Length: 239
Image (cartoon, rainbow, N blue to C red):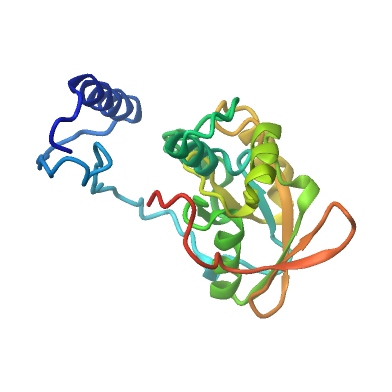
């Protein structure tokens, strides 16, 4: 933390960390604090390391993804990245709120319910949904086609992104996940996700086809354009 940090800010941050850890069922087992010169730490920043365990019966990865599978997003994209950017730069944009959430609360029962029908799963954080899908397509050596009109984006996010010249598909998310599911289980997956408050706006956004690692977006204008990795620096840089 910066020299001279307001104690009220520190208390607010630490209380937030405690409540988030409690809600997620996470134990904070160690910590250390350093003070830097005034003006050199953006007030306060926190670096964390988490330890978790993957159950033996869970097998998720690009190696499972095959043509014919479908792509599902657990809710609207772009909330977190745009909220952080607007807050840092004090743009005064209204209606924006981060989507930070403890996703294991919905993911674990989702995997238990769908079993091997869930082929792959990831949070679309750095580089947003577009980069996440591009990385998947390249790793699995398939093509992915997604429909712009099916990808949920809140109107506040869509409007603010247009003002700032940003694409919501490349904005970071912290409380959403993207999954590839066997086509035969698509309706069952959506029904399950929409019953949970963290994924009530889940949507089927596309499909996997044979290919060589490309991602295509069917736009609302009826055209098709290719999606690539995020180029340049992520705005805002949050992770």
